[in-house]
Amino acid sequence: MSHRTPTRLNEDGDLEKQCGICGDWWYFDDEFFNRNVSGNLASPCKACCIEIRRRIAEKPCSVAGCPLPRYGRVSSYCREHHYQIHLGRTAPARKAQKPRKLRNQNYY
Ligand SMILES: [Zn+2]
Ligand SMILES: [Zn+2]
Image (cartoon, rainbow, N blue to C red):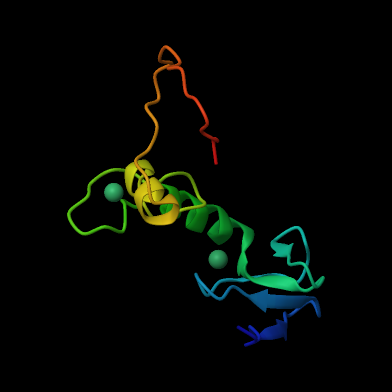
């Protein structure tokens, strides 16, 4: 995405930038916007970035009908589906189990 969010000068002559999400105007400054890797100010304001992250964390799994929460921020699926879809196996049990003896088997 390379679209630029608009900027303007306020009545005091300070540069302001419009948040691409909430549409509010904030000072064109890293106090209100995060910087992305290329050193430019990100389009959403900091408050919106926090909100986006929170919402992603709260979103349910992408598999239809699965009500489980997503597996962290890295996946769009719950833990079970994350393993099934990305790793092709079922998720290991969370509780510490007695390790079974495995021979000639690699953990990858
Ligand atoms: Zn915003
Ligand atoms: Zn799921």
